[in-house]
Length: 279
Image (cartoon, rainbow, N blue to C red; front, side, top):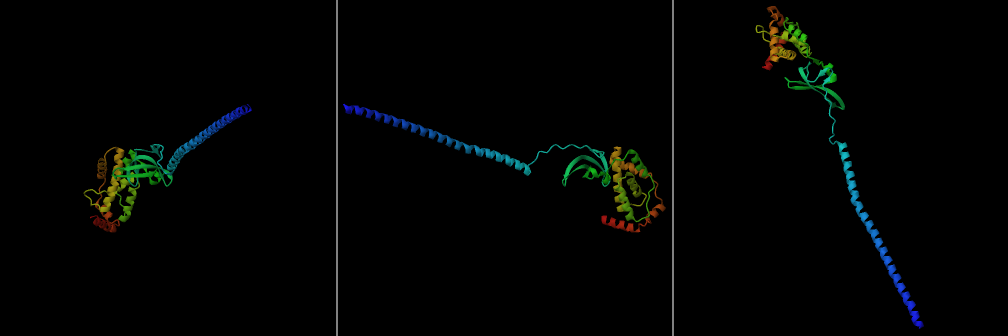
């Protein structure tokens, strides 16, 4: 009997030990599963982080590159320029007289950056010469640019053509310089004086080559301005000028002999040489 009683507690103790071992194994298994879950979540986090960071870095790098490209000279969007229509009393599409070239038309008034400084420029077109000139608006007084002559001044210039020619008793080379200075002065009356003095009718001796060149230059300047002021063609203006010249008193024999003895002995030689070169 005592032996049976002793066996029962032993079995119970063995069963308890078995239960405790099973519980321990379950606890260990659950801990292992939990640790695996934590490890898996960590791995997932570490796996997802590198995929996000490079994309962000790429975007930032793209923005930085765009900024550097813009600073380095990428095309900038310029603001629309202001359209200038009037400066120093002159307007676009207006005809003006530029002394060195004659009558021209202002096409535009524009701004340009030259040597780091911004300048306003008149864009002047000389249609007959097929030339475009840009003149700083601040320099028009220095170059002598002016408006067209008033009708009264044009009438005075035409009256000048009917006067008697005035030829100085000086060498031709000096007179030629004076004529050229008058032509480039921009003064319409002074230009008319050159036309009057160098004009030759059919009954008078022919002009020398250099005289003819100066006469044609003065006639061209005068006819252009008269044509624009009177709203006629240049051909009509030339006819009007020649009509006024025909009314001028003809040079007599004494006047012609004086013109030949104005110290022009050297000048005649020079003109002959020029004419030979031109031929």
